[in-house]
Image 1: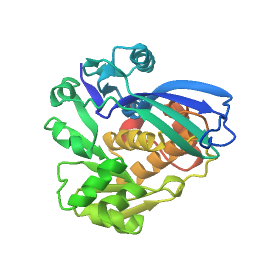
Image 2 (image 1 turned 180 degrees about the vertical axis):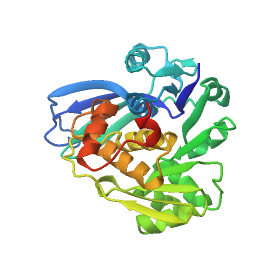
Image 3 (image 1 turned 135 degrees about the horizontal axis):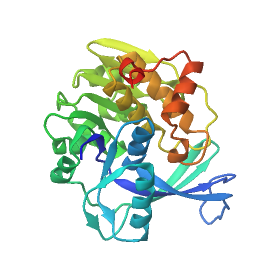
Length: 297
């Protein structure tokens, strides 16, 4: 069965310690008021896409362990399909949000998705990080992302073209590492020389992008941040949703910025991933209309 979007980044089980008064210092213990277990990593984008009305699959090795069983169940409950082989251990991240910031500790098993596993998802669009671009099946719309390590590696090369990418979506820090630029606008201009559409997110300050030579900047949406985990993943989910429904660049950015802002007011990204109806209600307050194709549903 085909899906609208396949998320080919590693899926984690996130353990979020809510309610910490401060992050613990070395040798110090802090007590949380709640502990949450939720999908993390590439699974966050998939959950956001499904809640917005797309069909989605997570393509990631998952463990034959209690954590993997729990993660598969959580994703199935969201309507997210799981693709990828079974391995011994599931990747896990402990997330410690406090005062709008967060610290994380991660176990990563080091296993990677394969091209055959990604092709089996039969998706019309894929979300994949820069080192995995070659895994994307021909003919799919490719939305590329990067973490710090991948951005640093790209920054060392800097000349590799990304013409096969439909949109490159990175945050301001990653964009700086990739280009050496000192501002989001300078970075997006440099990235636009390598890809048809370059998007740089700026957290609470919104996003800036260039497509077809046109620079578009949208402001942030005020939000009281409790946990910013996964806000960038949900930005990507909403951006892909809007793009697949034919929205022009400025609207794509506005939808994505709004969706990401809605996610940070509660602990865990999945708890903050709004439904399509919730996003539409928020959009009405900000003067946004549903994309034309979406209104026709």
